[in-house]
Length: 309
Image 1 (cartoon, one colour):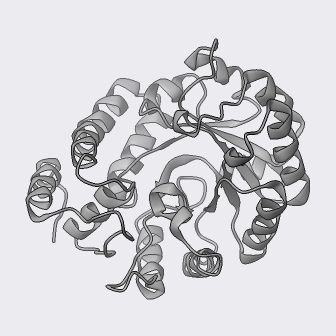
Image 2: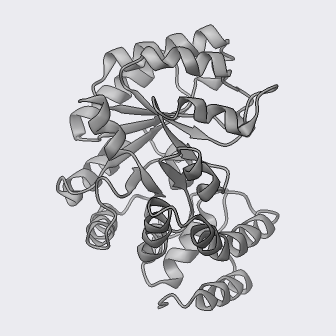
């Protein structure tokens, strides 16, 4: 695909969608299809937002090798060419990542979110080779994803060298490598779509960013679509106020509940249940929110004025 087409497709609020499980922790593909149609009907469409499947907050690393392709296929078919579908690929060596990338491209994903093969303890040259070979092997967009917890930073010089890789179209940005500033990556904003993962979408957009990670766009799409509309209109103070008014209380709740049980999708799944679109619990050992936590979360959602079940 054309690089500019891919950059246009992979921008806006990034909906890291949850994976629905039934009571036996098997994927409920029917629920996923219904949700995808609702997300599309609610405005999470190509050029405006991204539907990201099987990423970390969507429990992608917990899915079997025969599960994530069927999950992706379900979303692609339900979206019916109306949405930008991106698939998460994490932590695998070059050979397996290329195999997965080709499979995702064949299924119909427009892009991939790809983390380095962190268990290979890659050097900067290793990571450049990894993304270079992946770019050469696929025709869809690649969003590079590194964050502090991976202990695998990519240097700015390495990002600069990725400018020559045709299908590297985005960088998911949160923590700068040692010796660099948070703002430094935006020197590359003409080349890559910088997607903010630091909860600063307004600041990012002002510097040339083209999207942001959030916890809510698939929960209540009108909220993040409004944030994006304000960003695109350069009404940054309003965008920041609206984003923070929802993000801050949810993130504080997320941090508190993580003390009892881990799992990136637990709060997201609680939110889905509160708005009337339940997707089951996370796979063990992660535990679902308990009754007290759900009551507190419901109060937070009601304070936003969002519809609840």
